[in-house]
Length: 407
Ligand code: GLA
Image 1: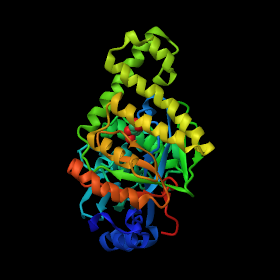
Image 2: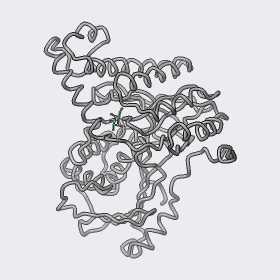
Image 3: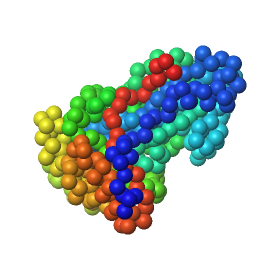
Image 4: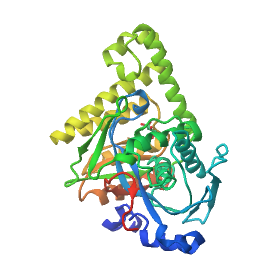
């Protein structure tokens, strides 16, 4: 089948939206930009994959995400009328709001911009109106955190100087607040932190309790990260996600009654959990077991990456996926099928679901030169198993959000 053959270039993530094109299009569509082209700015915000450490961030544990070159970009010109107006380059759809009268969420993509404006103001950061154009190669609903990318890009465009002179962690926390309190998803800090602070060619080991972090170089001279989007809609994603988080909080309350040193699942070792088993119902126990063991796997993966021990990385990925499937119960038939196909492809070192689950993407660590083989295997085997159209991207690991210089 020729559709499954393709050229090596087809597997590479598309180039991010071109700065010159964005600038020209903004000038063509926005009179304010036409009148003051020198005031035009451009911000880029990457997506992310999480290598390991799933559903650990809101349990004050460890995560190991990386920012990737599937990117969202906003070209904008500041406006003095306290209004924000954005157009989506692809569809021409427009959205906007008044900075001094931000209403409740509406269920559209504009919520992420309005929520960020609201969270900036709540944090005492002055906001400014703008006219903007948004273009993106970062798929939505693919578990690659396009929402955090939109929040971060908005935070840059809404402030003067862009980014408000705030450090990346502060911006990330403001964006998380937007998502928690305005959009209504009770997410942890991982996505915003990775997309704000990520470093090229490195994963980010983040301690979600202390917010201390460091870069972990990835062996990208010999291997690549490949993102495999299942193309399956995230059924009930937000409510299931919030439900998992609530279960963890209930478990902590029960465990803390037995051991007051426990403030989060981060404080629980597998041995402690086994001792306290009788206090939790079976399902809650399974959820806790995932979190507690996943935290240990993050640290094991970092040590293994630093030692070049990819067999251990592969084992940690496989254990993580199985645990998310069987204990935390956030995988799906599609994610499981994708992981199975990837694991059976020669040259694939490790594969697991990435992000919240309930659909979304798989991340694979693949030998350079085997990316196309993986794509071919997925295009041939995945649609007949699921009836869905997958997308496969070999991605670069890039820096976190920031202005595109010279644009
Ligand atoms: C989503 C959330 C993150 C994290 C992951 C699961 O991506 O936004 O905070 O909880 O799910 O690891």
